[in-house]
Image (cartoon, rainbow over all chains, first blue to last red):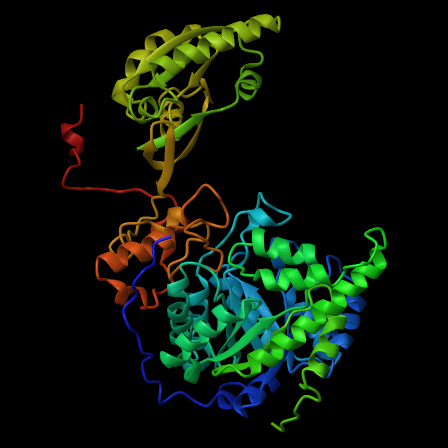
Length: 342
Length: 228
């Protein structure tokens, strides 16, 4: 793989930008504006219409995160709408971050649904391109991609800060004042491009980003150093993604099969060693040992990440394992969560 | 050029069910160059159909013809005299060719033998790649001569997504990440600054989204009174 030589880049000044807490009145915005180390979680809506499935997952996250993502047909598999699930979650007292992809909606549907989401009281938004439909359960679907994630961020910024629809028309009564987020992958290729893409997201309109799962701490430190040197971290709240591993096999799949993921061998060795001496037939005990080690590694990672300059918080992804978030946040010294009055 | 590939034989056979005599018509332009619908392919397909339908006990009589450019009516005109004897025409033209025959010979059943895929580039002998979707609003000057509309599965305009690894696209392990190549090209051209500009939402009205497209060039149009 040839290394690419990118020219030097410094973020343009953005001195007239409003402070984050004035851009949006969400809890997450207040926590980030106060300079507190933020904690976000994630809730995957069910592949059905049972509201209790959302409520019970939300209760697992209550009071241990500042806000939690609600995924939008994640991995291109049809699930309950992120906006509807977000409302159910909010009713349980957990602040949602609505995820929306460019895959399933054109600019008309995006703006319409987000006006509706704002009317319901949803305040945080994560703007994504979306996994390709070929990896999901409707591979024959037509994808939309009317706009890309960068253009989505710009559209939301213009709706909020200029009260204009994407077409330029004025929004009667003003635009929705979302806290605008994006995704960032420090580990995808071209590796040299990644800090630049982060800067571009800030320029496009992101207030915060959440990163891909961080297991490779050395590469993440290097990425964050570039982000700080470019002046990006001053203008953009960077929340590092972490997640507890459930088994050594899961770690290997992430390392070998998922494009844009980096899992160092040392992590795999630790997960493998966690079940040493346990009979391979004793599945419950192996699983418990793996999960305990996964949580332990995750806690250590959160503590390491807290020390990295420019990181504004952690995004703890307990994928179909929401129970893990509370013990991780607790052991990492992140509880109780701060309460900041509006 | 327009790149097409032949439909599976069984699909073509199922279209021919109930017909006794069929004319297979190839095209000597794009689909001949990509070995899908030229003279040789018409011969091979016709022979396969004859043998296969005969073995099935439902023999279809398939005759062969080739026109130089099936998308232009002047080239198709000589076919007209023979058409009465055929129940249907099996076109080995691209989608434009099939529709030209259908428009020119109304009342005659026209069947497509090919799937038209894209406007493509022969990457090597026997390999063709999508290069253009005819969006009607070219951005190649901004993207290092690489089209993100046709070559990125998400048609991204602002750089590679998080699934690019080792220069390969996450959607297709056989395909280059178009944005990886765009990054390399823009750097070589000293045009990296352009990559940091947020490209605005594309106006898709010049593409299919804007309605059926038609180009009218008055300067080359033939006045009604001069038309034959």
